[in-house]
Image 1 (tube, rainbow, N blue to C red):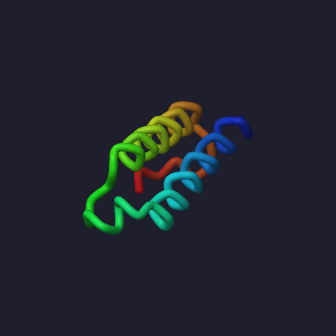
Image 2 (cartoon, rainbow, N blue to C red):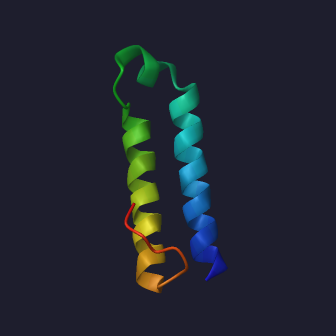
Length: 60
């Protein structure tokens, strides 16, 4: 169970860090291809946690 939560937290932190530091995301005011991929990975990790019935399985 903790590995699911670890994966979710890691995906979230990676996405947020990218959004803070990516020049292309800031220049275009739109997510770059890497940001879209990282967001997809975060959404998949969040979905896995919800399926596992882990704590705090809210949709927001």
